[in-house]
Length: 215
Length: 256
Image (cartoon, rainbow over all chains, first blue to last red; front, side, top):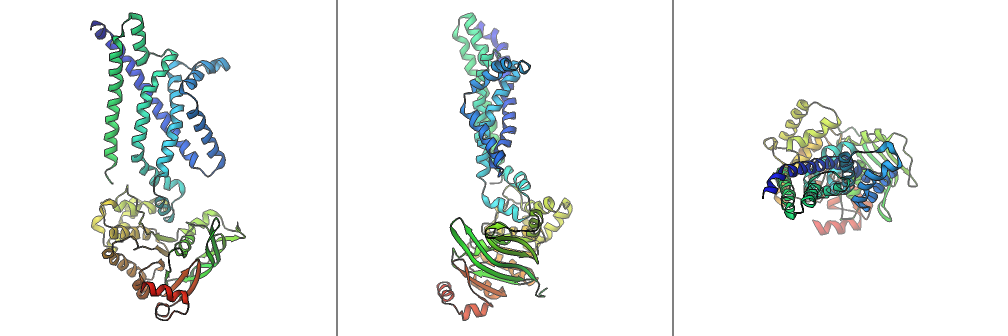
């Protein structure tokens, strides 16, 4: 019991890093994912194919491989590109997440009734105006469940950064457990992960309710 | 306003979707202030023809003139247009359109629906846009619903809002694509009333409809289409009481 109480600050700090990593990564993922989604919808062949290539690559190779590459391999190829642990973590997580989010966002945009774009065009709006004022805002509500999903998956995928030595929640647990030789630390580990994912599940369901006001 | 000025002209227009030929050698003119009703069986190409007028569909062959200007031209399937795409878009925005399924913006209130395009496209200030919107909503009898969301309105009310929204852009021509086909019968009347009012005020209108009484009472000219061709056109009385073509007769027998 004493062990657990003494280790509480370490767990808190580890959980904090997990949360920070996830938040930064999801923001990168959403912003970049949105651009990629629009790229996939673009009539410009070059933009369209390039976006498709990105999605294919980052969804098709393991996150761990991408993480290893950014943290371990890049400095070997180009010493100037030595990225410290924390940024390497959220960059890898963010770039990977962007590929999944691109498809999620694209699907949400395409699920909006074609009549909305037709009405916008008939009223004289440009494609850009119609997208930003009419189509994309309507897609927010449809985005909340799958993006919530992605966020929660990312919270757990963040455990992978422990291979770099970053002391987020998972590594904190394994370090403590291995050094003291006691498996009891896995209990607060799972509790913290569940606490984090549950809080955000709650947040997302509240968001979803808020956005369904007009339907 | 009826001075014989030609607002819309289609000259030998063809339209195909892939292998399917939907419009065959269509040539029509619509004069200013005229109400043109287009009737015909489903699949006849009526909606497609209407949608070609404001560039929602692009013609495959032929010429399209809006207000005297050549807006679209295709020769042997290739674009032969001399004016810029931007100018063509500007000309097409002189046409307003009302859709069968209303297509109101569900995430915006009634008032917001009506002011959105004038503010975005014509860069009108919010105050001005709201003032103009309230006038239009009063015209269609829905000023008291301006802060409601479309999902709270009946079909007839939504369509009337859609008409106000289209009118907010001050179009020279209003296109109606089966405006009452998706409505419960008892709601059809209120929408036709608004359309009739518009016609009385001298708006140039092209209406694809199955409401024969409206065509009879309000239209200056009726066109009957079937399988992508214009079979017959003339004044409502002529078309409805003594049609000259067999196909017209068959169609009218089924629905009158």
